[in-house]
Length: 224
Image (cartoon, rainbow, N blue to C red):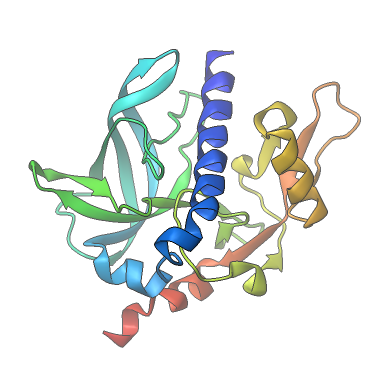
């Protein structure tokens, strides 16, 4: 129950942050492109959550570190196969990760990080966020899941979206973990479909993504 509450709270905070960012967009201008974010990141890597060590208030993380194993390094030199990502406080584009149980593999993310000036052995997210969810499809290929949360950028991924069959366990989400307004908009956009509508606890399955290879092209890493 506590784990379910935490996942719901993290998703809701992410959604509220995205809505808040959209509301203030006219005042601050449009978010940067993915290529601009890549230029400001010291490390870009596909990584998998191994563990977290957070201080919590009412089951919500408010400070601490997550430890992620690097699967593919695209930019930078983290110096180790397991990197520490630190966050403190609650802010618009915070960088907290759900902790896997002993029965689960960790979630995969594409990380955009910078070194912590107070501790060069660990990393921080960018002001625009730090990570996008990555899922595995049935052909064992990586794809960025739509809708994207956790990073603010101006590129319109919807134009690149493809229907995908995901084999990743995190492609299925409980109904209670999706705020009603978000669930309705995602269903209308075809981004989720019922996974097992006959079950007493309804679940949804993500259906759209952008291949990680195509997503990397938007970062323009090879042009530098």
